[in-house]
Amino acid sequence: MTSVPTPIPSRTQFVLEAIKRRILTGQLTPGQALVETELAAQFGVSKTPVREALKTLAGTGLVVMNQYKGVTVRMVDADMAREVYDVRLLLEPEALKRAVRRGASLDVARDALTRADAATDTAERSLANREFHRALYLPCGNPLLGRMLDEVRDQAALVSAVAWAASPSWEREAGEHREILRLAIEGDGDGAARALHAHIASFVRRAFPDAGVEAQGEDGPA
Image (cartoon, rainbow, N blue to C red; front, side, top):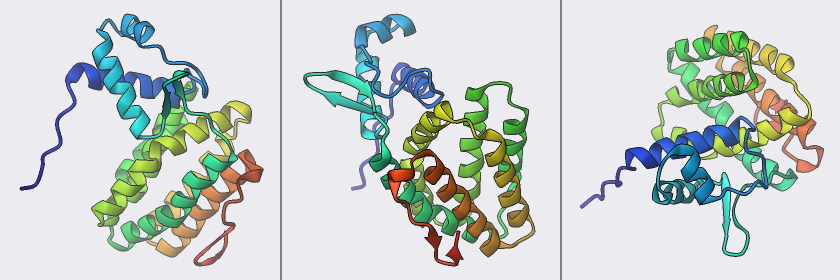
């Protein structure tokens, strides 16, 4: 018999999403301690939903649980950036190429890009950019491929938040996003995949020069 995942209680889900948003928008920074009692007081809940939310976030790689140091936001370094972005470089351009070849709608990606351009703060722009990338790979026609990219999505956003805090590069990335979307809408799956590969690789090389990500994709230099 196939097991059915246990639904997360609503209070835990609320706390989970709130903490995640704070981490991914830079309100909670890498290495910062996450104290159950303090978070429970902030959200007006008992410690139980906070504890469960933190366990879930540890499972997704956003926080680290240590019996001596407690729970902290995960630190970001070149090794982490390399691991996360290697996966993105291997899978995300291929997923986009498949989505384009299937003739999938890119309306969600276009809407996310519009929201990012109109954003008035870093948090809003960051969340819109995350949705833009997800809208490119999700309609690839392979649900497993989409889920695999979803699994590294939050960690990639954490890397981005740290990089943007040190050296904002929103305008450059916005231009690259527009070019990727243009190629995809025109039906150039290979060109869109190459542009996406170049976009991902150049970002992590600028932000973490020691990460050593692959500079080339399957179609040549990125």
